Image (cartoon, rainbow, N blue to C red; front, side, top):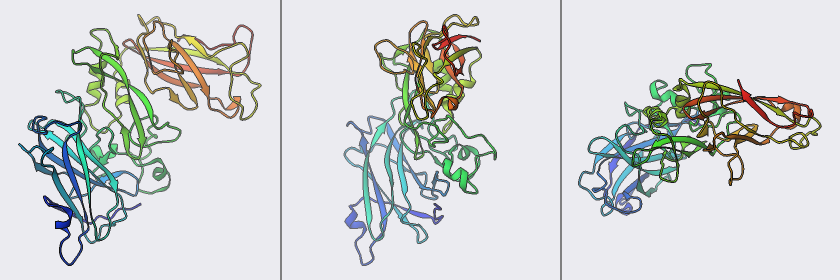
Amino acid sequence: MRVATGALRIVVALGVVGALVAGCKPETGLIVEVEGPLGGGSSVEAGITKLDFVVAHPSWCERWVGVAPANHTTRDVTGRDLSKKPYDFLITPSHTTDLSEQMYVAALAYGADGTLLGEAGFDAHPLAQGEVLKRTAQIFQFADTKPGGPQYVAADGACVCAPGEPWVGNGSGSGCDTRVLTSFDRLVDTAGCELTPKGSAPPVPVCDGQQFLDEPADRRLPCWNSDDQGACRVTTRGCADHNGIAYIEECNVDSGDMMLDAGTALCDRYRACQQTACTDVIGCVRSMFTQKAAITCKLPIDPTTGPDEPIRPCSGGSWTATLPTPASTTQLCPAAMLDGVEQPPYHLGFDVAGKTGPQILSSACPSSLVIQKIDAPYPEAVPDKEFDVVSGEHLVHVTVQVVRQCVDGALSLVCSPG
């Protein structure tokens, strides 16, 4: 799906739609109206002084690309209460613009010190010939705007990757633009949609707005952040991984989330990994561990399972086992499944008392691993599995080795160091 490269001209619109289309020749365009903060309150009290409009179209690689000169048009709203006096912004196409293409618009809301305080998103819609459409959105305020907080806009402004919104590159093919990925389908069949550098391995699993291979969409992933009192806590955040949208929310913690020991470096590591916009946060966290350990688990499965029947444990066995403490560690708690519980073809995680199904987080000492199901058509198709667990201050690499036989005394999942 190739997008026209014609320019868009920008007009600040302060009147109603009818006033804009008055005259003999009907206009074509889109008005986006930015209102005050979602949930009420004054944008002045919220500290919002500037709006930066992001305007993008989908490229033939199914990635969002900013359209110049409309993209990153800024407007000063210092002292203007957007709740009482919303800001209207009109975008009209040039004669070469394909009106049937989706057009995405968002308004980034900044404070006087340059801090990104929130965003008003208008989703993506096509234009209509002879009509000036109007869409209205309130500013969603980000919760984590403290110094050193997450960066959702690249240092040079070229790429925007805010939570809950599609990632937008600039089409340059360099710098941060290479981190705004093509879709897997276009990677496979369209010249010019290769990953950078060419020949790079598919980013699986990575929360980057695109679903590659058997990577699960709409999954939960662990994240770490400090609460208002400075205590480091761990929770989960949603990852959409489709339509260009990566994480759907910030990493926000409160008193109900699991608190970690004082002195832990996990919150600092996660925060540091969010300093680069449009990046693989989980991969960055994984690379920052200096303390590592390994566990091997033997997984007996019933070899008599017929084709297309659910893979099952040996009769009398189970797929639950205590994770041992390797000699190089002092403890394996609390623990987090670094890539979540959906790891095709396995659905696995921690066995937590009082909760149903595998869990991403566990506070038990020691933790218990449970494999709930394996989506394979027959026993011979069940692969070995490797995954990472953050346990205490360690990154523990777990290897699951499949045993396609049922032997007395070895019917259940068994895990050991090494």
